[in-house]
Image (tube, rainbow, N blue to C red; front, top):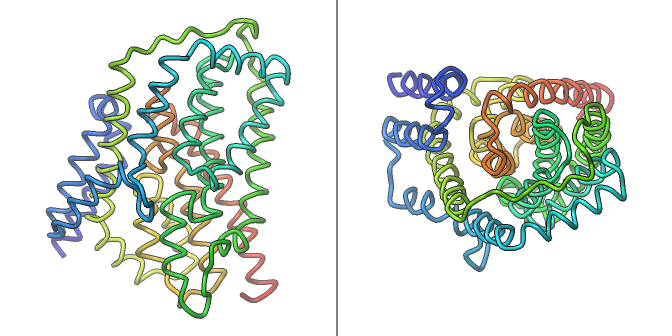
Length: 359
């Protein structure tokens, strides 16, 4: 009981302090690393394998034959943009000017959401960050575009095991009977929900970004980052990912205890903790072959949507927020309302499906 109480306190601190304490908000990576270390210590789950996973995963994602991870992608893309930033920004600006800002925003949200399952969520997140940097809009609209796009990227990445660890783990757990999940299992299961949501997000992004266009479209933003900034950002992403692995593992006993005692309908709303926890860890705890298809849909859709609500919820959020200097409160003001609306919409759709078709 003392272990569960201690873990519950850590979860509350993770949910509250980034919004209440400025020092925590400004050093989010170190705060989550501290909470991760404390949670694993309280749970008594320290092991050599966990330490290796926390150190290795940011630079070598699971099920990849070569060491290509989040750290390398963020660093290499950052260095490329540092070297060729002016030319990249100039070409992106020409595309924006030709297509128009509204249509450009729509296309980027939809295209990046759809390709994230093919080129991986990490690469997509880095591309998104640089696209957002050149948009000729004020900071508020830029943040709004990024948050909407990250929802789209996080959703789209689930369609194949290439996209993100969540999909890889889900496929791995469901590859046994009765589902015998193959490469396209999640695409068949969630495709209609995910793709329709991505298109809706694209339409919303185009509408919102057009609504407050104040800057001159002819202006091309100057690339102002230093080499030190590029390297430090990649290191911060590394620390953040390692911290989430520790935190997810440390809190897993609490998650398992709660999940065992709550009905499937309640899991949909409980999964909103994915906004601050590693959703891959939650998938490992929740998804089992004994679940019905609708239960699997409910769990995964809730995790995917909730992951866009706050910065720690998904890799694209972490990368984009680091590149553009978006704070937790700024993200939450936009991400939480969007997430709540999407959760309500899909809860209604999935509940209707259960009552209509009985599965």
